[in-house]
Amino acid sequence: MEIFIAVLVLLVLIGLSNILNRFVPFIPIPLIQIVLGVAIALLPAGVHLPLNPELFFVLFIAPLLYNDGKRTPRNELWNLRAPILLLALGLVFVTVVVAGYAIHWLIPSIPLPAAFALAAILSPTDAVAVGAMAGRVHLPKGIHRLLEGEALMNDASGLVAFKFAIAATVTGVFSLANATFSFILIAIGGLLVGALLSFLLIRLGVWIRRLGMEDVTIHMLLQILTPFIIYLVSEEIGVSGILAVVAGGIIHAIERDRAESVQLKMQVVSASTWSVILFILNGLVFVILGVQVPDVLSTIFENVSFNNLQVLGYVGLISVLLLVLRFLWIYLFWQGNELLRTKSSIGRPRFKDITIISLSGVRGL
Image (tube, rainbow, N blue to C red; front, side, top):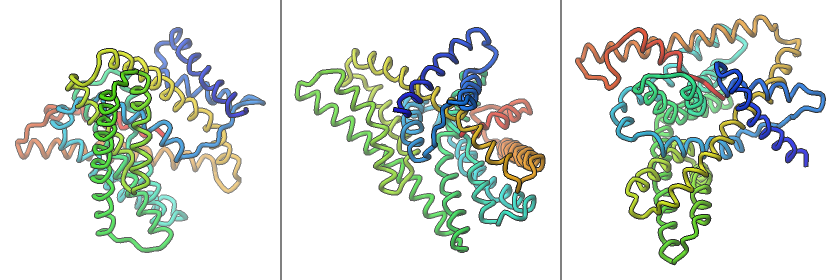
């Protein structure tokens, strides 16, 4: 009963955040939702939700990234494949190495493998946060697509780096060959499994329709279950569930574009249903984040083992380091394009564009 009431309270806060945004439109809705989450958690009888990472990924990240895969223009992603891969793969691993050594040097009490693990957590940008930010801040079209593509792809590289950093911390053994092979297996395997499962689920819907079952609710239920099935099966196999749901969304978009096998009524119901689901899930992500903030901060600031000012200083220095690394990486990529006379799909290098992309690398959750 407590969980049910907590969920109802969070849903009310999502609605309240949109009402408040009408009066203060200059404040982004995600920020309002985080503040409301903090406020409800600080009340004497406030909401306190234990955060289960596995449940969070299945319940929120799977459908949100599946939807991103459906709506992201495939041609634009393909045209931006080089910068996306350099950010999603190259920048992540450079960040893990450079930031890992920097964190270990800055805080010697953190072992080097653990520092690499922390850097791996911080290295990927977050697709949900990027989408929410882009909804409020006008970004040039090419930069927006680049950030979307990077956020969709870089979780796999970040998770692989984190996995091997943790293994090195526990066992004291690290193999670059094993790490590289594991990344290729997890990433490519996730894309293939996601595409295959999405194709099979689409075929299942077609088969059901051929049996004469044209009820939109049945097909809508199958569509809602699709990202959860893809994510859970992929993770159980041992490949990237994140990339799998992205690939599944892309396959769904390809099938939707064909349109002959999809009813107009189904398209209307699907668009309406997903708009409600995404509105609720996006809101819950930020409200739950706000609910977690007081407990996290109290754990740090009430612990006598930590010097609070020193902790804040470390956070600031590491944040600046991440921004500088990102800026330099993007700058070098664009300069390399100029030297090789390679035409970039996002234009010539300009300080303003490089700065925007650097500052837009939202870390999110």
